[in-house]
Length: 506
Image 1 (tube, rainbow, N blue to C red):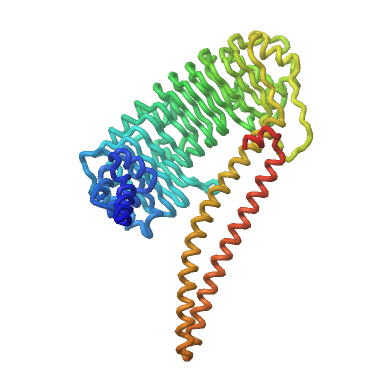
Image 2: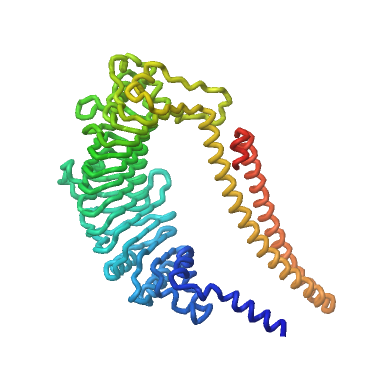
């Protein structure tokens, strides 16, 4: 009687997941691939059709041995869905060199007819050529194309954007993408790649390059609100009257920024070179107008040639940001002003609205044990703070930067160790079961061999195979053990460099 009640209690508790509403189950299944989600249909009648109404689909070629099987599965899932339930997002991940034109066309036709709002396409360890006129959807609001690169080989190629019909697109993220602009007749600087996306609000270009007549990115859009440019090859113009947030991290070449309503600017260039921009003598960054609505600015610049002309460029840039409230500058930039203090000696302090000024060293050698002195001259302080006497001034030391970087390094190493330990635990449990099974087989063979002596030589080879299998398992555990030891040594080395207060937090 007791055992029957116990079994009943376990069945009720074990099926609690099935009692959850569909939307909660969908949320849980969104963390696994669609292949695994479909496999849950065998659990019970309650789960049989759950996958047909999932709003988010995640397909990966890694789950299949061949591309035809992957394509067949994708078509099976899309054709077997409950059409009364809309698909909100589709995520595609391709591993290796595969021809994706057909499957992409199939999926894009599906997005067109089923009002899909979000599409993410990722290429890992392979190359994708996005065919001409591929993307056409009145409902798509978020699109992400992510490539992978070895050296200078970009793994996603887009022939052109001018034929894409995406009137509802609000967010576009492009990573490791090469653009081939076929319209060599188009040399108008005011015509941009993304100008035909009428509702575009957020744009990210990460490690992208342009190949064509201009070999530069012209981004002209009347409604763009947020723009991020990281490691972009080739200069260009940004004409965005409604832009609020701009992040530029190592944009090579000359560029003109026209964004009069900008409220947040993050600009970083470690090798800031001086160019003759329209023979004006401006550097690679040129603002077409003063940023009168700017509230937050983080400028990190290191000139390849530290001369008086570079100091003049810094002063000109700062004067155009005179309305800023929260200003962060790297120490190397400020030191250049300290060297050529005559550039600012007769200039009034431009910052009347400044609330906070922070100066920090951006280039810190973690192995250098010497105490680096952080110094800002009186003249530079006057130039930066005289018009805002109540502004807070923070001067970050090299030691604080080292501590922050070491904390981040220790946290990353700890996360890596945690993943390794979890993997080791799973493998250890699997290997233990595997080895116990083999040992049972060996014992059975020994008993048989004792009775049938004629088969001893034949069984010996099989026993050797089992022994080699044990050694392989042990070697893998030893290797993972060595890796854990190395990680622990690295973590210990980083922790010893931290102040006691930071160690306590970790």
